[in-house]
Image 1: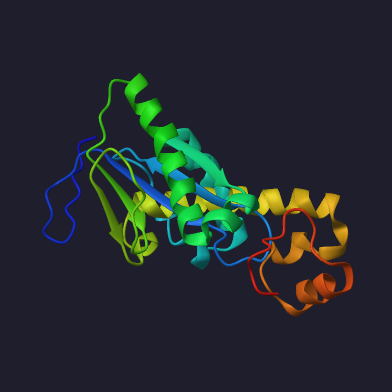
Image 2: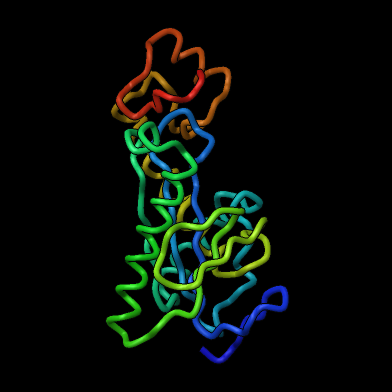
Length: 200
């Protein structure tokens, strides 16, 4: 990877793993994280913070990321884990799992990552230098790519969940709090993928 990345006066990095999560705010479903290593010639015009991209553009970017990335992975933390350790640390756990999967892919290729860059202000417990970047999903291309993969994967999970528990409308709101979701919760009670420690 020829292009080097310099962040805020920090050392230059050749191999950057970017990680982000999706699903911290919902009342139901897992939290999903992704980790990505991009080549220097990746078409970066496809990337942006996943929250600012339309679903169509996210879905268009996903196969390109998966095809061209040096390594990528998606990982999860379950609603049960969220209830046990809280959503922050469950998010860190999912990111660590995604990082470990990508690290294994890199090791198999004889590549060593220099740094893990994550969106936000907390870092997971990993075995390489790790830096949290506030609004990193709008600053670092690898984090943007991870954001897109995590968002798309979680959305697909919730659409599948809607088929099993159709009364909640998961296919529409993806488990986030909204009036229709809360009304269904009051009427039917929680289902097995609801987060029991969240306020409804």
